[in-house]
Structure formats: C-alpha cells, structure tokens
Length: 202
Image (cartoon, rainbow, N blue to C red; front, side):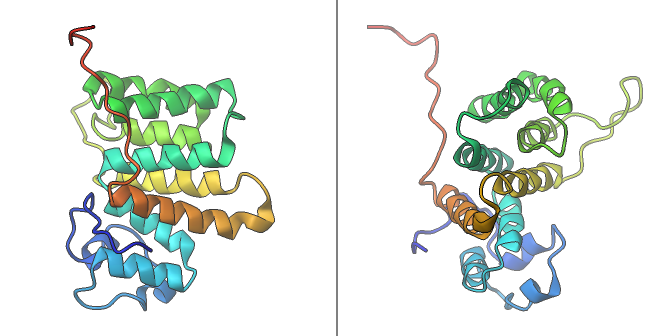
C-alpha cells in the first residue's frame, strides 16, 4: 500500500465505518481502538480478508466515490463484454457520478430494475438511485432510503464483478479491487470532470 492519506474518507476511526455493516469476528479481531481506516484496511489486506475489505471500502467512501469505484471494478472485470442491458445500467450509474443530479438519480431506477440486483451493473445503478428518493409507493408518504443502502449495493456489485473471469483467480481480483478502492480513497483514480456546456468554444 501507498502511505498516501485517504482524503476521500471522512471517518477518522475505522470502528465508525465498521459499525455500518456486519463484520465477521475473524476480521473484527484486526480492529484496534482508535485504529485509522488506512491502518484497518491494510490489516485486512495483510490477512487476505479481501471480502471484508470490499465491504469496508464501500462503506468508507462517500456514495459518489464508491459508485465510481464499482464502475471501475466492473470495467476491469468485464471490459466491453457487457450486454446491452448491463451497459445501460452501468451508464446510468456513471452518469449520476459525473453529474449527481436528482434527474440522473431517478433515471437510474429503470435500468437498475431491468438488469436486476444480482447483476453487478444493476446493483451499481441501484446504488445511484438509492442516494435519495423514497422507498414508499408513489402515493404514500415519503420514506427515505436506508442510510447505508448505496454502500451495500456497491459492495454487492464489486463482489459480483469479481466473480467474472477465471474462478481460480477470484482472490486476486478481490485483492486488486480492494487496492483499487484504496486508490479512489486516496484521490488517485477519479472521474473526469464535465466541462460546462455554456463555456466558450475556441
């Protein structure tokens, strides 16, 4: 690991992040009092507890960075081999990352539903849609999404993406995805900025 600070992670203590999801006892044994997120994810990597590392990174990152990380993992795992349905879902997730507007959040629901929650692209689109809105029926009072719904969907997407390819190399993909997430947390792998369409053209 690099010794760069995880500038995209807001939590100071790893324990605050771990409180957001189920952490198996074996992984929890690596957690120490006042341990930083960087120290804890390094400990998980050292012990080859990669699935727990995926859960941790998904909950440590803000939703926008987490979904972007998921898109990068899916691209790494599948390249251009996605189906049209998967491409539409991945495009919807990436569009929300590039421009996190309410319009783009709402637009992610249809491709998410079509791809389905057990598809990595579908899970990413669902994560984008779950950054706001209501889980209640259309005519019912607003019921906000769960606070960690996007993180859980991203973690699922990354794990599903890691199932693609040679099964004997799945652990390697788990590790590389955790390290990719650390790179996003360090600010090294960010989305391209969208230029204002009203800007003056030369």
